[in-house]
Image (cartoon, rainbow, N blue to C red; front, side):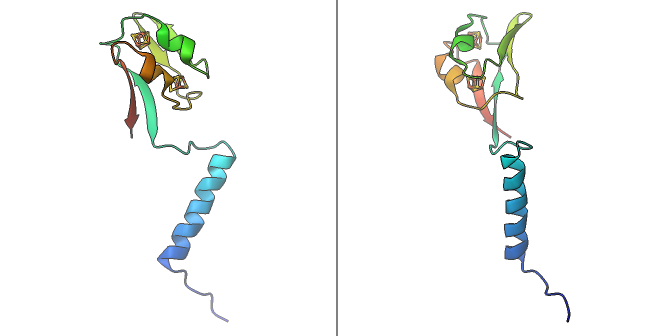
Length: 91
Ligand code: SF4
Ligand code: SF4
């Protein structure tokens, strides 16, 4: 008996299930966006720190930075920043 050739749809479905498994196992993020702080705009007011549920924003020299490992892209910091220094960007 010969092995059946998979259709492109079947291959895509398998790939998706593998990717979802990775997400469920915490190996990959289910998002295509990330949050960044533009150091040239940040005035170090610190407002973003207080609204971050993951506590992943910290001072770094003359700006603030986001630890992407813990950021869940909730967007709270984007909304609260008075100078629009925080941006959710697609990658
Ligand atoms: S997007 Fe949310 S989790 Fe990520 S740094 Fe901003 S407030 Fe924190
Ligand atoms: S709220 Fe905006 S200006 Fe204030 S520290 Fe955060 S990124 Fe910088």
